[in-house]
Length: 339
Image 1 (cartoon, one colour):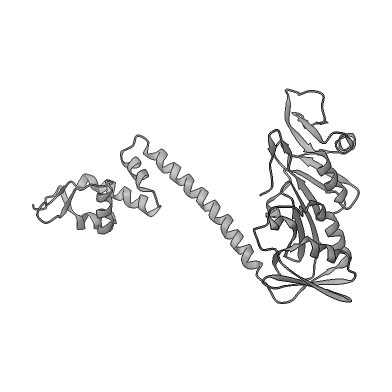
Image 2 (image 1 turned 120 degrees about the vertical axis):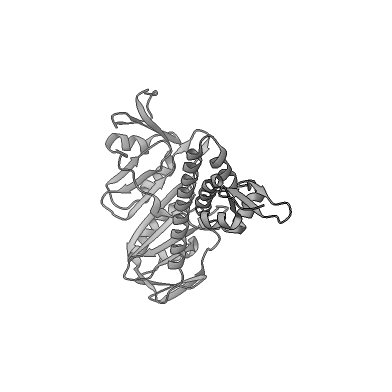
């Protein structure tokens, strides 16, 4: 067979389409781009000028990782643009996941042991522990939930606890440039609550040590699992704040649970007698868990904000910055947890 103006050899097709010869052979085998003809004696593949367009489309899809099955849909299906748009959405989702994972890796790198220690005044440490220990679940199946997370960065030491249904945070300013992320057993945290003077925390790969006037104590770190990232939780700008009688009714009711109903005007009702068809949403709250969280907050100006039926309630005091907690609402068929 001889080459004509209407036919391209595999080498010519490769140069014109930017597809390697090996790729052309692969796409022939997969049925994506089958040659116009194959010489029975030499095995040479021949392509038509019309196939060059498809080859260039395939080359572009290959560069952005379009799967074989989707290539076929683009080349022969009724909605090629929809297929490409769907692949773009997958790429964007993958990029978001990659950014999140790289952020986690950065935090892990930052949490590697560093030389030096972190000094915390025992009064600050005691107040912070009192604000978060209520949310530790010492009977939890996962060891990571039986400890206190120390997240130290940018001159702030955040103490964080969660039992999956509550998450409590207390932030203390420290004079240290160290970045540390570690989970200490609750027993170690309780020992620190009762010391006096400046406490110096020193971290190694698997242990934490605390030195203070008159003593020193060490403990293994809890390494089984990854603690939830409290920094991704933020109060919603359109949250409804409960105060006055509503706040008192929410905390002082007799039932195990309470209902907060938010109307379309942003007004709230606690344990309403009936369902208002105009309400925006209603929240079912475990009253005792809420009381525990409220009682642990330092300061006097208690603030509770609700944002939706399945979003965490924000609990804090307006006169004590850096201390807050979140409570997952109850669900009719179970509970949603922090993960």
